Image 1: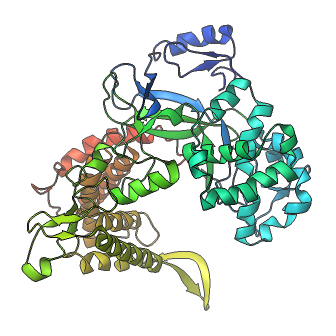
Image 2: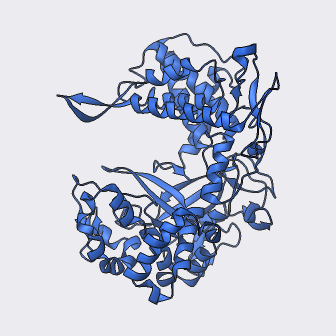
Image 3: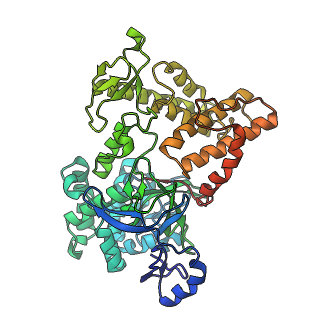
Amino acid sequence: MSCVVCSGPTSLRCSGCRSVFYCSRDHQKLHWSTHKGECKQTYVMSHSERLGRHLVAARDLEAGELILREVCLVLGPKAASGCVCLGCHRPLHPAAPFCPCPGCGWPLCSAQCRDSPHHTSECSLLEKAASRIQPASLLHAPLSAQVAAYSFITPLRCLLVKRSSSSRSWDALNDLQSHVDERASTPAYIAYRRNVAKFIGDVLGLYGDGFDDYTILKMCGILDTNSFEVKWNSPGAGQTKARGLFALTSMIAHDCRPNTRHTFEPEGDSGVPWSRVSMAVYTTVAVRKGDILTATYTQSLWPTKRRRAHLQAAKCFCCECQRCSDPRELATDFGAMRCLHAAKGGCDGLMLPTKPLEDDSRWKCTICHKETPSATIDILNDRLHNEILERASKANRKSMENGKKSSEVRMDPEVLEEFLTKHHKELHPMNHHIIQVKYALNQIYGKTPGFTLKELSNDKLKRKEQLCRQLLDVANVLEPGLTRFRADLLVDLHATVKELKERKVPVKKASNKSKQGPLEDYSKMLPEALKVLETENNHGRVQF
């Protein structure tokens, strides 16, 4: 962690809130006049047989409270990364200028990135691999070669924590859950042993530095189990992606409807962008003293079976949260299908899993009670999912100039609207396929060239308003409170309603079935959205 006063290495933590760190008693005293108004312990560490170590609320917490702030322990390229700068992690492209590191030869975006704390400790080791990797040619190599070259960087940075940081940092990292024993015989870890462990051990010479295959594979497991995807916008380079380890935040338990959210922000005054990253964790709803603090390790707009399969494969546990255990997914019927026997008997029921925590559960209609094997539902979901991907690809076409593709993206939302029309009898309005397509449409209308709010017709503007309302009905259940999902939708809806009013277009008020209030109430909700967005600092979204 870093001192909140001078950003130097720390040895002290505030005993009250446990969220602020200091290098000395003098700096702790110096900061107290600023800190005392916000110093309230928010969490304590707990342990259970089911969850292991986890955090619980130390007192009653209001929505929007800062729970903790933590500096990233290790930051590095993602597991399947193409060429990125090893200093600031910006993506690198052959057509863009780059600067080879004078030490190891690996491509950097600028000379100053050589001094990034992420790269300095690994530079001399990477120099040993220059003859094998040929870093000068990486930018022009096939993507598969780039992925292979960058696959060992972040596991190596984990190992170097032992060499370059305090023993406390190494202990915190090494103590994280890896599930390496369960993963050792999987195809991914057989490949890790061959491509990552052997390379780090033999080529870089770390076998002689006290590390072995098991320790290296354990670092791979720790990254797979605990790392967060960090995204931010880099000027002139688009979106930058990396993965980071946060030892304390990793103790927050998973829930498919979490009570916290988190965001990233740069720290320190280094000339290298995002050379140090911290994570801030906030409550999204009121949390009572003793309640478990939770985050989600998956996607809210996935149905139960897909979420649980992802968690089992990526995090090595089977989720049994309230949403996963409920066949109706908290009364949304998010994963439900219309009765497959409707064409024969006119049944208006929904097909739901009889045992949602079992992968092969049979599905039963809520009205006619006829059952269907899980495999049949899986085939139907796969077909619909593939159709959405195909339509999304067609909707996002490159424009043509003189018979050649240009860099300008040309959107065609009607391709997605056709999906909703085609399947409106097969899929009910809250089905996850329908909601995912509506979310994609909402990202197009009002936000892409050719479809900005000012460019939309009155009908398309009213369509945008309708999509915002329907998505908010979902967000209010699956991601309630001060979440980024709800905040973005509230801002969208506020801007859309404002444009409709300026055009004097009559707008229907919310129906009795909608969970939303009248249009006028949304202006009152804007401060709620801004409370979320102001903590994002425009640095980008945080995702697992």
